[in-house]
Amino acid sequence: MTLESTERFTTRVADYVRYRPDYPAALLDWLHGELGVSADAPVADIGAGTGISSKLFLDGGHPVTAVEPNAAMRAAAVEWLGGEERFSAVAGTAEATTLADASVGLVTAAQAFHWFDHDAVKAEWSRILQPGGLAVIFWNSRRLTGTPFLEGYERLLLDYGLDYTSVAERYNDDASMAAWFGEGLRGSARFDHGQRLDFDALRGRLLSSSYAPQSDHPRHAPMLAALRALFDATAVDGAVSFDYDTRVFAGTLANAS
Image 1 (cartoon, rainbow, N blue to C red):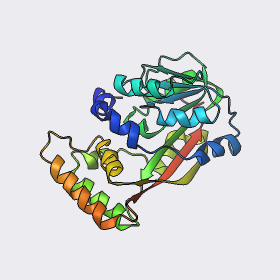
Image 2 (cartoon, rainbow, N blue to C red):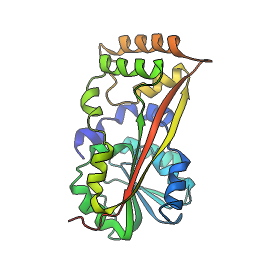
Image 3 (cartoon, rainbow, N blue to C red):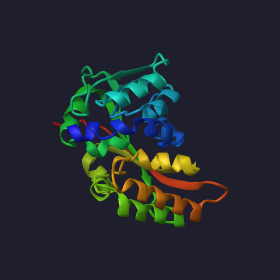
Image 4 (cartoon, one colour):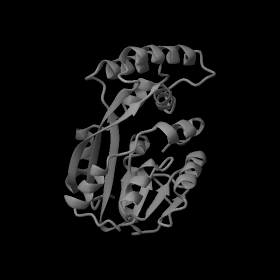
């Protein structure tokens, strides 16, 4: 995990907390049901950010340690979830978690996985996983087509995003995830997910993205004007549907070196 990747969301924490999507409960049902994961298995949530992914596992009964290098995001997670006795947070990275050997039953990584050193994390996560423990990688993949809003939003990002294309290309696909797990892959699944956003929420959702120009950038005002025009043209009953496919892969890392 590079310094740039750990710090690029620092100025976006408030929007991230309020407007980023959560993850469907069906994902946890799949882990507990099809994969037989115990609801009390200790979780290390890597790159936990403001705690959105941690809350999914807390709600499912798991004790959770959030591992997050960005101080502002980690503080937001502690403010939100710190009252839960099963929650703790540490300053660590995906490649150097600070956690003890064989201390967790699940290592989870959500939206941040594409920033990690995918070779280095295998050794580190194997170290902290208990025998038979699973790594679980999941993320919300925004749908790019299917409605005028989704297609217009993608065009907006291509027109105004600062490094949108290079960030988008970092996200994982099914083939690369299957290859990363190799023989350890235990299963994968896809779930429908989404948000209904009024204009203020849509604006916050856009500004939570690391590639959205901020207020001191010349593209900022034109981008927001284009967003307003897109919203006005596509909203139904005062909101737009921000649709996702939530993808999840789970498996062992027994063969990591």
